[in-house]
Length: 424
Image (cartoon, rainbow, N blue to C red; front, side, top):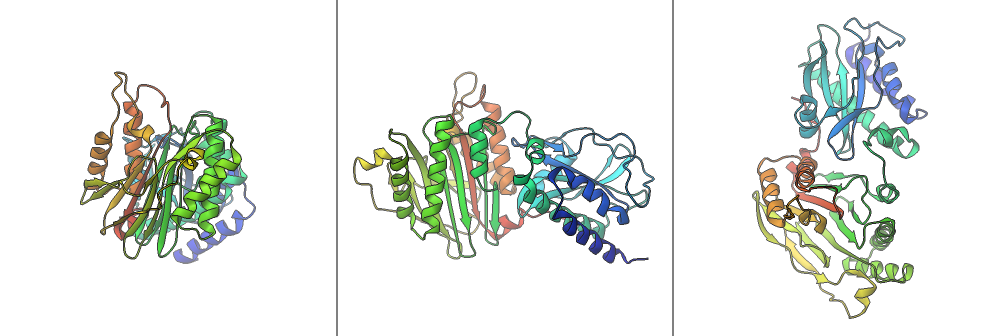
C-alpha cells in the first residue's frame, strides 16, 4: 500500500500531466480521475463577476459519478446550483480565504478557496469518505495545495475556453465589456510587502474605466483611468490609454513620460476632444516612497491606523488627451511617504456619484467611512473592495449611469499574507 504522502504526490503529478491537453470544460473530469486513489470527490465553483454567487463548473449530477477505482459509499455527487457569497458557510470560506468543514446533504465536505496566486476564483467542494476527519490538518493541507494547483490550471485555460468565462456570467456581457475585460490584469496581486486589489462596476457593461499595475520585488506601479463617455467608443479610448501607458512604462519612462505618451497616443488616434482622467503612481516598496501624477481624477485617500488621514492632492495636471495640449502641463509629481500598514484608496467619480432613488449621492464621506470600517476589521483587500462595491450597488436606484472603479493598495507584509488561503 502506498504511503499517504506518496498518493498525494501522484495526484499532483497526474493533475499537472493531464492539464497540458485538458480543455476548460474537462477540468472537473480530470479532477475525478486524479482523485480516485484518495477516495475524495471534488466540485468546482467559480465566482461571478459581481462576486455575489459562486457557480458550479459542472451542472447538477443525480447519481454516482463513474470513475475507475474505488466506489464511494457516502452518496452521490450533487451540484444543486450557485452558492451565495453572503450569508453562507461556503461564502465565508471565500470571503476570508479559510478552509472550512461542513455537512452538505448528509455528506462531510471541505470548502477550500480556489486561489490563483492571490486572485480569488471561487471554491472547491471536497466530499470526504465516511469516517474521515475533516479537521485533520494534513488532509486540509493536501486539499489546499491541490486547490492552488487546480486554480493555476483554470486560470491558464480562461483564454482558451468559452465555458469558463460563461460560467462566471449571470447575464450577457456588452461588447464594450468584452473588450475591456480582455485587456485588464487580474483583480488582485501581491508581493511580500504589498497587496493590491481592484473592482469595476457595472461588471457586464463597463466600458470607460480601467486599472493597471506592474509589481516587482522593489517597486509597484499602478494606475486607474476613467474615459469620457460610456459606450464602445469609451472602451476604445480606454484601450489606447492602457496600451500607451504600458508601452511607455515598459520602455522605461517615468511618470511624466508615461503621461506624455498617453496624451500623444490619444491625439494621434482620435480627432475629437475625448479625454481620460486618471492617476499614475509609483511606490518604492522598500522605503514606502510614493510618487504620483493626477490627471483631473478624484484624489486618492490615505488611510492610516484604520482612519482616513488625508486626500493626496498634489501632482495635478489636466486630463489626458487633446485638451491637455492647449496649455503646457505642470511637470511636477506628487510625493508621499507611506508608513507600514498604510492603505491607499483610489476611485473613479462613478463611485461617489452613484445615486439612490431619492437622488442622494453615495458620496466621498460614505465611501471613506466604509473603508475605515473594513480596515478596522483587517479584511483581505479584495474582500474589502467586494463589500464596498456591494454597498455602491445597493445604494443606487438602478444600473449605474457611469462606470465605478475602486482600487485598494496596502503597504504591509501582513496584508499580503491575508490574501493566502488559511488552514485552521
